[in-house]
Length: 112
Length: 116
Image 1 (cartoon, chains in turn cyan, green):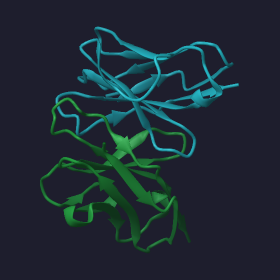
Image 2 (spheres, one colour; image 1 turned 135 degrees about the horizontal axis):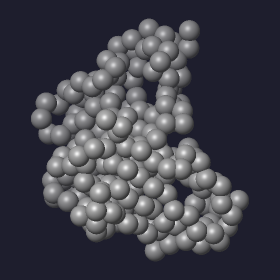
Image 3 (cartoon, each protein chain N blue to C red; image 1 turned 60 degrees about the vertical axis):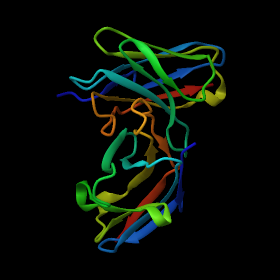
């Protein structure tokens, strides 16, 4: 079992650009959440996807959007990148029991 | 709104000494509480969780935590620290009682250093 996988591992972008991050959930999991972890901070909830729909959203602007595909994998899109978007982006997945969420290794995004 | 406060951004202990990482929570409903560990350049790994069953929860790697409602605390302990325990530890709270509210709210983390 591969667990939760994320790609790419690292990414460097410049201000104003757009970025897409990808997440494949653990086998058998149908729900995916995305978190942003700024340097020296705890992860902050961005949004959650289930059955290809956004089910819950944190306090993030509309520049942050997502998608879930029929195979349960997910994408996080960020438009008009700001320097403050530099962070580790984590994906978590589960099925039936959200009290056990499995996290991926994250994508480190650097915005210059 | 739910929140957690982790007291101490850095904790240093000697190998073999007691580990105590503090977490206090705020929640308007019975909370679900978690401790996660993060090693450098890695994601989060669940250490243990409290979901309204036994108040003393045992997790992986010899860690345990006790839920104390009267103190709104969920401190993480390990009797004897090992060098491999050096990592960042996060306390998190979730309101799972509503069924769909499964987001985790994390504290700012405590970096544990283990010295010889």
